Image 1 (tube, helix red, strand yellow):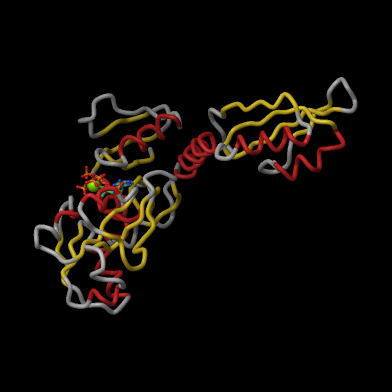
Image 2: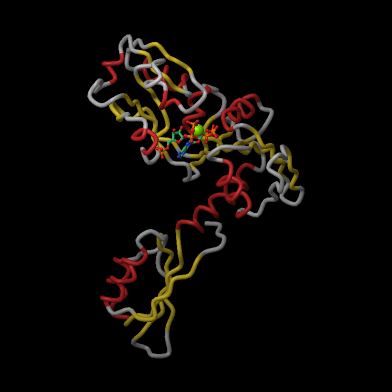
Length: 280
Ligand SMILES: Nc1ncnc2c1ncn2[C@@H]1O[C@H](COP(=O)(O)OP(=O)(O)OP(=O)(O)O)[C@@H](O)[C@H]1O
Ligand SMILES: O=P(O)(O)OC[C@H]1O[C@H](OP(=O)(O)OP(=O)(O)O)[C@H](O)[C@@H]1O
Ligand SMILES: [Mg+2]
């Protein structure tokens, strides 16, 4: 049975649970449940703190897990490695300070830097040859400068709202681009490939739609240039020999532009349908 670590709380937990449910796995009904067996799918779920997941996977106690790339780097477990990007909880990890005080990572020499990700920040500063004093905190680090325990913070930034509200401004390079990832040990456990195919199926179903339309046959090459599909469009004959029916998979994002462009070319009866599951 594949043993899978899933975030029990925090930003990653709900989307991870939704994704696993869409992939056909049993979930938990009570948010306090820590262990679920899905015998039909031959997997077992352990609900754990996302920060601890790399430790369980690296040790071999669990086979795979869902965590954040920034957390994976922060805990520095070399035997846990990223095997798939899951496309949610996207953020960047940045330095921030009151406007105008600092402009580059070199300015951090001798400065106090507060972060809930001290391992990640320490590695980054070492790589840049900068000696700063790390102030490890548990969260809400945006308040650390105002409260006088640090000069600079390094934290997760999504929309930037939290930073703005704390009167802080981003500076310096991106420390890391993060998102939810699936992690494993080298030499994936049996069943990992099946889990991966299911999760990829969910991502495809979320990101792509099916597009059907009718088109004068002479315009197929031009239509293919607008929407080529993943491999190649499916072309079916219509009763009228001068027309064909076309089916392609296209990214959900931008689908209206594609529909407008195909309409302008001469396509008609343009329909979009959702994909509920996929194995590519
Ligand atoms: N606002 C956000 N947008 C996108 N990803 C985020 C955001 N906040 C945290 N994350 C991501 O969530 C992961 C951290 O999850 P974790 O549950 O430890 O923290 P959290 O969501 O901040 O939880 P909490 O603050 O409730 O303890 C990291 O990968 C981080 O990049
Ligand atoms: O750029 P934004 O959209 O504002 O999002 C970023 C904020 O979200 C997270 O905070 P969270 O609410 O998880 O609190 P925490 O700092 O205690 O972890 C993160 O730590 C940032 O503070
Ligand atoms: Mg947080």
